[in-house]
Image (cartoon, rainbow, N blue to C red; front, side, top):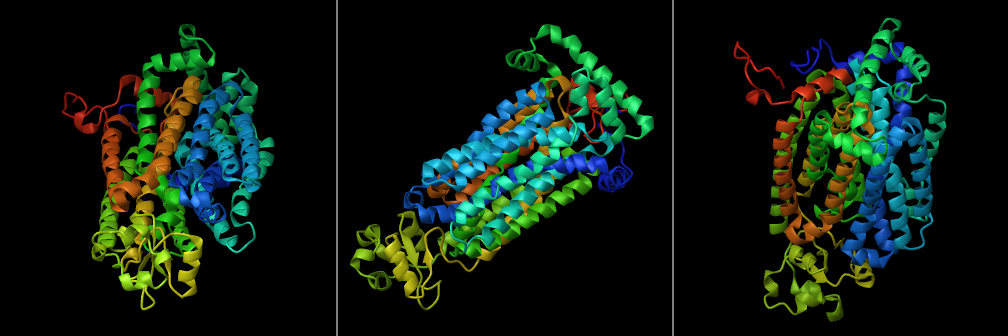
Length: 578
């Protein structure tokens, strides 16, 4: 059974999940209540993309400085690294439930700080605080769900956390659209994030601690009582026996390492099973970020503007489509993650992601090469002081097009005839922007008008559909089940820190990369990273579908090799299956 990698599945895990939770609704109550942590994660990921458009309008220094925009976006990720690091220790020391409660309080405080921020630096502080809460919740919620779920439907239930992440992103775009005309726009967008934290805090007060953590703390009767609510009566003793064997094995190892945070970290890194789990866990978490997903989630409206849609409202409305597709993709994952396996879904997902990124790069390259020309007559229409300084001093202004203009930190004012006709290259300031719009023209400061811009939006949607069922949800499932109980908090924390660190690198450099390489070059770069990630996943990540935690430990103890590279038995069959 261990060599084969998984139990056979005769029906979809989603059907089994529905049947089991219908009979035992307490299981779904646990999963959904803890999964609100995913909702917080998703909302924070999505809301800043729309709020940033209006923060730029309220604070002109933010609009002028690319690094300041990147910092406002990415400081939540920096906070999440801190939260994930502390979250690993808190999970083991205080338990899963208390860790979630603390994350809710931290997140609520951060949301209030952002909502009342009088200056960009206060927004950044609020983003860091919110990030700490997100980092704690991002690793604790799937861990709690995983340990409180029957192993038969564990993958589907952990996927509810992924579904709520994407649901939070979709909700954030709806909230963004709802407040576009309200006074204080971005303050409402960011402040509303505190409400789900309050709801989860109240719900979690009435829920139990993880049974696996309780058993580890010698609270056997409490663990049995919770397992009795989750499993059929005839399976409770078997689960307790499995827990007992796992805990006793871990206690036997404790003599070689201390119980403190550093002792546990040292013990984890010196443990062969944990190291192999970390190879897989860190691989999938880093790959999840380096496919470029959070360039879409954090900067989706900006990317839509790059594709030629200048209006803030239009950009956010089109972004809502990609966010909705993310929810659909996560539902697909819930249906198939335990039927077809974690590994297979990730590999298929990566192939689709690479294809979409390469084609998307081609679309943006074509759009940039065929952007509207700059007309000297149109540029002079608004007065010499309005013309882009770089254009006025250019040696060959006849060769300029809209994209050339934008690269000089200027803006394109469309022709009155049509957006694709030659237009004006103007200095990017508020007065000139208002003059352009007052003449019933469109002002482009992020992207150029294009007749194929809608194809970029369609490809973004396809990219999301390929990402969500595999790389969107499966890395969190893998990390919730691949570490031994004693090191589950530490292992999950290390993997979560690697995820958020990769996230920080991507989100902090995206706008700078697009400025240096263009949108086409940036997406092509992410395609290259995705190809590298695919290779690492193939060689390092085993299949864990349908396996008990103890079986996963045995699989890692033996070591994993892909099917094509596994040693053969006497009949010529690979001993380790994919």
